[in-house]
Length: 206
Picture 1 (cartoon, rainbow, N blue to C red):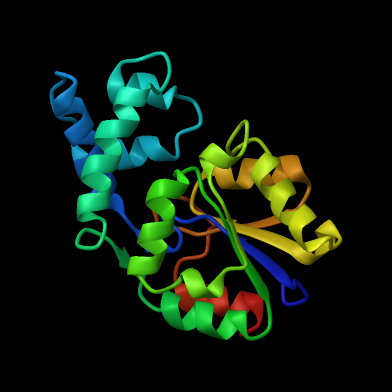
Picture 2: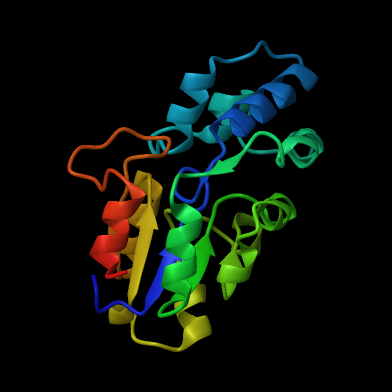
């Protein structure tokens, strides 16, 4: 992986520990639409579960509706600056990587919540391009996000690696035919994954 020049990061669970925020936000939406709260652990585990319909699991709906997004954003944007944090060592890693690599983000979050969060944590400056779920027809694990990023740089796919904490990230990379790395400090529990940020930096050669 030391020869890779372009690194695509997932956001939630990879760069940013937003587990508390996401659990609280989803439960806020549930309360607003008359549903009982879910356990926080069940929410974070479901975020990366590609076998479920997330709209059905979180909101008992066949698909996400505008009312879900409205309530989601009202809580998320009011609390993202107090209920999130970077994973330990991530800011330093991004700073080092940005000196020798091109960095981007592919996230299934919407841009209206993603951009303020990146600004609040002071890491937006490290990324050339951020592709969010509402900017493509189909989000991860579909390869559209990653293909848009590759197209932005106009470089061969062999130069790219996708880094994420969930199956959606790895499947998206496989579907886009680019390499990937799985980390184990996010919302999932994996075997044979990268266990800490320092280890990831060594693999990437910084």
